[in-house]
Length: 176
Image (cartoon, rainbow, N blue to C red; front, top):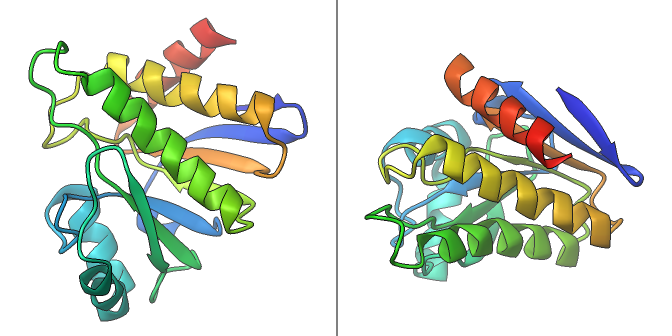
């Protein structure tokens, strides 16, 4: 599914984020930036040791913040690492932290002149954020950003599995 916002495109696809040809991909990292499971582990494995070397130099990332490294062996030139919140019960500012994670990735991409970026569904795996709630936050943040900024030409959400893709499609239809 694809929609236009001003001169930009927001796209939803099912696939493997490590295979994206966008200028940047987003890593749903942990605070240490030293790799882990899920998307984080896949990006580190596919991107090779250069990403980890740069992550070690950066020294970590707080929840809701974002940092950037090379893409290593990936098609993407850059990896933007962000730390989403661990979902506890929805009353510990999880939604604000998740919104900030997306917003800070987009701001960082803009500041680096990046025109295309691919996101996973941040915090919906091991961090247990409910998929529908996370999708709404992710999409609303992306739509708001594209309505106010024209520098990013493509935001692609790369979703793991048909359930995630269908959930994002439903939420996008509600928001546009």
